[in-house]
Image (cartoon, rainbow, N blue to C red):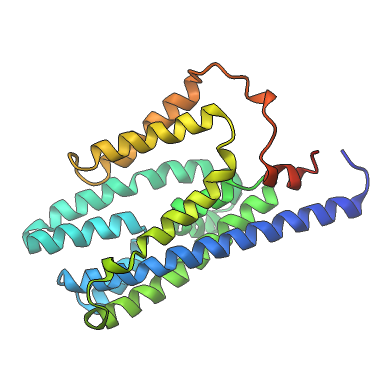
Amino acid sequence: MTLDPHFDDAHSAGEGGRAVREGLGVALATSAYGISFGALAVAAGLDVWQTCVLSLVMFTGGSQFAFVGIVGAGGLAAVPAAIASAALLGVRNVAYGIRMSPVVGAGFWRRAAAAQFTIDESTAVALAQRSPHARALGFWVTGIGIYVGWNLSTLAGALLGDVLGDVRAYGLDAAAAAAFLALLWPRLRARQPIVVGVAAAVVATALTPVLMPGLPVIIAALVAIVVGWVNWLGEDERIHPEPDDIAEREGLP
C-alpha cells in the first residue's frame, strides 16, 4: 500500500489506458465480423434496412446470426423458430447484466444505456481489469466501440454483399475469437482455470451439432460454473502468482 498520491494517480491512469487499448482492440476485431452478418442477412432475404435495424436493435452477434441463418434456411415459415433461437442465445446477456451491475453503477438512465452494450465482449474486457475505474472504462469503451463499428460494418456488408461473394471465406469470425483468446490467455496459468476453460470448450463443441443454437453456450457456461465453483482439483489459488499483466497493474514483484 502506497501513501504517495502521485503513484496512485499514475497507477490508475495506467490501468485506464490499458482498459481503453484492450477495449478498442476488441471492438476493432469484432466490428469487422459485422461485414459477414450484413452480407449473410441480405443473402438470406432481408432488405438492407431490415438488416441494419436488426443490428441497431438486437445487437448481439450470436442471436443475429442464428436469426438470419434459420430464416435463410426456412423462409418466413421459420421466423418463429428464428426468434426463439435468437432469444435463447440472448439469455446469457441477463447473467452478464447481473455481473456488470456494480461495474456500471446506480442510476436509471445509466443502467438503461448499459443494457444495450452488455454483450460478451464488453463483459470480458471489463472483467479483465482490476480496478473499478478501469472496469467501467473497459465496459463503456468496448460496448460503445463495438456498437458503432458493428452497425457501420453491417451496413457495408449489406450494401457490398454481392461484390464480396461468400464472406465466410474471409474468416472474419476468427478475429473475434482471437480477441477473446487474447483476453483469456494471461489467466490460464493455474490448473483450475485451464480445466474450467477446457471443460466448457469440450461441452460446447460436442453439443453444437446436436442441439439448437443457444443451448450449447448456456450448458457450457453452467459446466464452467460448476467446475470452477467445486474446485475439483483441490488447489489453493492463493499460492499462485498473479499473471504478469495483472502483477504489473498491482505493482507486485
